[in-house]
Image (cartoon, rainbow, N blue to C red; front, side):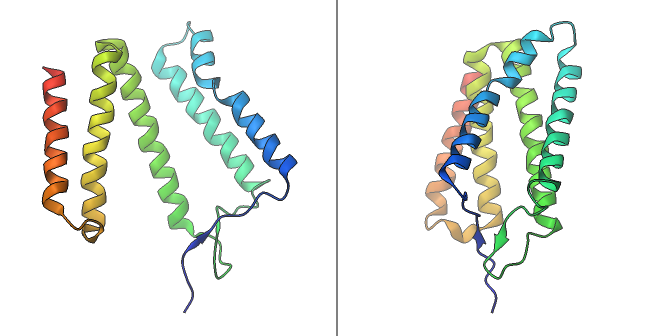
Length: 159
């Protein structure tokens, strides 16, 4: 019986790991820095351009350097199309959430928008995780009491 547990590839050298860490450090502030530089563009147009650029760059790296494999399973098989589609869907949801959070900050301020955004993600993420795998918690009543308390905190924050 083949196992479907993911095996993440190891970095072949410390120099390669250091190079990737420095590259990610250099790119960390790209979004906010380019957003400040693009004041002549409406935010929605800027964000669509930025997202498209990141997607195309990731696709090129995935196809060329990444050898077209997301990760390998223990039996050596590459991740299938469903895994790639799930990753694309997760990225789309993340981008939508990022746009909504930034728009919320510009409308209501950071003190209101951030707790509401993160609290909503907590509530919806917990409910989705429970819906996908109800056996993941031994005490669903406690889980839903915590989710209800978080939801009440969100409602009170908005009022």
